[in-house]
Length: 151
Image (cartoon, rainbow, N blue to C red; front, side, top):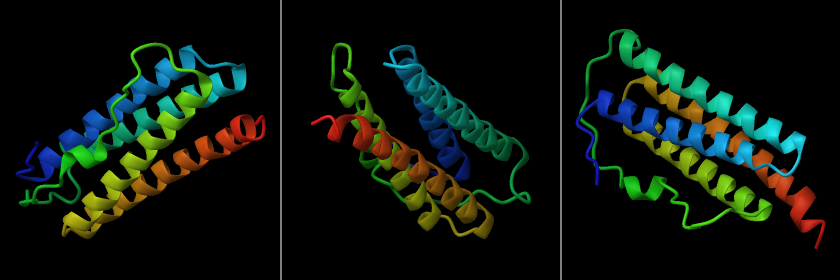
């Protein structure tokens, strides 16, 4: 399990999670069942790239030259969703996995916001949590529209 020693460790972890999300959404776009969902998955991949770029910029430029601070163990496994499927996902499975990933990302950023003392980092992580929550809602709406209503 990872232990974060400072804000750079936190940012590195968050950057990796965003890249994982980009890869996931690009994969989902490639197998989307229709043009609308392909566009949605591609849009989400772009948004996750934006999150990654924001985090990379902050890592390089800092937020007001903040000092590194000690952060306690965050129980990283709680924020990672593994794809247990070993084959192709059907559309319902892809939506469920996307919802779980967005929920995990939301929880990660919410917890990070609670663990940092600096207000600007706190606001950054809260903003990212809110965006991940909106992503989850989009997939929930899609699930409601195309899975629940078909049954």
